[in-house]
Amino acid sequence: MNPNPLPRLQPAPERDAFDYSVAAARVGGLVFPFLGAGATFFDLVTAPLRGKRLSSWLEELRIRLNDLSQKVAALTPESLALDDAFISAFAQATQSAVRTHQREKLDALRNAVLNVAHGKDANADRQGQFISLVDRFTAAHLKLLYFFQNPAGHFERRGIPVPTVVIGTNLLVYQLVCAAMPELRQELQSPSEDRTAAAFQMFEVLFDDLVSAKLIRLQRVKDNEAWIMPRFSTQPTPYPVNPVTTHLGDDFLAFITEPQELLP
Image (cartoon, rainbow, N blue to C red; front, side, top):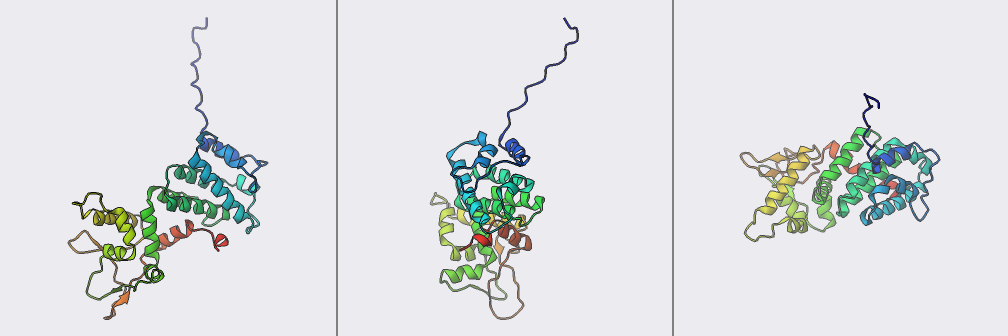
């Protein structure tokens, strides 16, 4: 009997979906049929995560990748199977997709993967941060961010007069958003009738999140917690509300918006 037996090695952990994705990225001859009924490549990447929600996400993404490949010559199954940036974005977005049912978030995650496949915004840090924001945000965050990128356009599309900012007065962001999207206020109000301030407080939390993430710029009312629209003009006459997204906010929205090649 050996007096100094070698310690037993612990069993290696089972490979999870993202271990599969790394392996897949190293397989140059991997078959990835955009036009096939299934998704051979995605099957390998996500074998341990079977489920209806995952299957729906993968099939929709496969169809959109196929559509994009018809218009972008360099986008081929072989190139994506060897693209580490695509594999990383796909794995991160898929993990987020299986955790949500909100259509706005699923669309944003899908568009992010499509834009990575297309080679848009190739910096891996930005890609990871942007997909993380989609994961952290709610559908309400995304709706508000799109609104803040073009408030006047939102009102015009709905046939509502564009609000103006009068010099010397404060335009509460909450009031502006409620006038633009009353249905969103309805969604966010408290189910308890005696908690009438809950919708206002929820909107303030959403505004805080977007400002904290450096995606929009707003101003605080002095000695008040409410956000107001920034004053962009020193003219004495009222002026229409302006976009309040930052450069980073515009980049983020471009990253989660469907590639131009796929727009009707």
